[in-house]
Image (cartoon, rainbow, N blue to C red; front, side, top):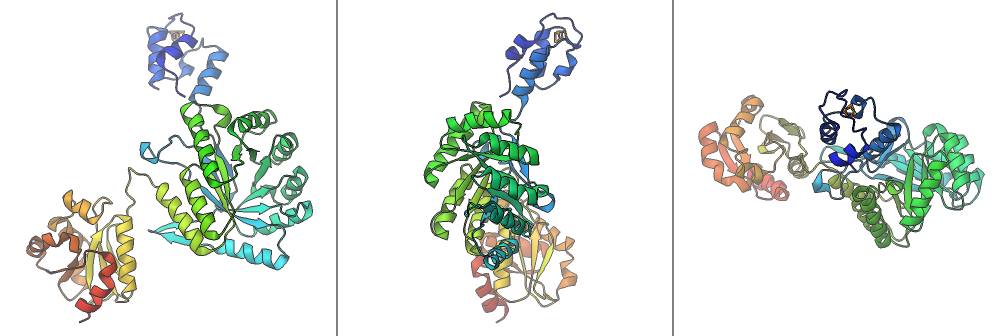
Length: 445
Ligand code: SF4
């Protein structure tokens, strides 16, 4: 937590020597509190002062990185409790289990399914990030073999075991992939910390309440582990959410360093529906990593969509490039529709046009990433901006007809748009989902 000017002043030498270029130590402290100068300008500051100020300046929640190359993941680094206060920084890492009790064929099959997950929404890739290798067998050799299979997915790896010996066996095979070692408990802290520290890999601390977790992280730090993730061992998703919320508050609002780490939560119980519901809730509050057992694509899509929505920057609308897009094999006779460059609006319209199976042009008008009605009421969508977009896209050379289909919500701009462009305006549906029927009934008729 940042210190006030007076708190900084109490730590300074108070000699008013002016070596820092300020008239007094108080003036220097005030400037430091406003981040206008750094402590390096005061040559007489004690080592203790330097350490205290460095600790106060440290972020309230550390970032933990694991995986390498394309599989590199990071969790933590969050600074706020609520997204609208600023934004969330590290999208929750989504991991899928790979139990080491599967036979060879089933394990390869599951790994291939995890590797094959490829989701995209509103123009963004939504990756499944990691594989959680589960030492369900309790056998070190099986665990190590499963870790090697996990590597073939190209995802980051979590090594989930209670046994330091099994963790060491798996690390011997995959430590170059910088896996996350899961987990040290009060009973295994020393041994597990030794295994993780030797492999230079981050570690998870597991305990059943925040107090015990705080004690455990201090123990792990003393044993040489700085990259720590917290696992609050809760009986159900509701208890986990309550516990993770308490941890986030303590870390961010009280600057309680022993809990200033990202968290992990497991939503591996119950049906795929139950797992996804629990995992989605845990993405909201406040899992930095969430592990599910299901490999159902529909379940994964739902979970990844929740994550994507939560981790956009609320102050920056997600935009697509404003230009003319061809849907299907659009040609000179194809209909032309326009919409705005708000990502969700554009991709909704695009998928509905696609569903109509009539090749078409979509003119994407630059409205600074706002939706149709918002842009219209803010005067970012009017006859002039549409005409400008038509000209920029050289629409007259793309189609022989001079007909423009406009969103039903802005039917009111038809007259002015016709005057401005000379094109015939056709008022399209108010709801994008009606576009396929509209194109069949109006354009193809
Ligand atoms: Fe005070 Fe340090 Fe500046 Fe001297 S250099 S006036 S001790 S803050």
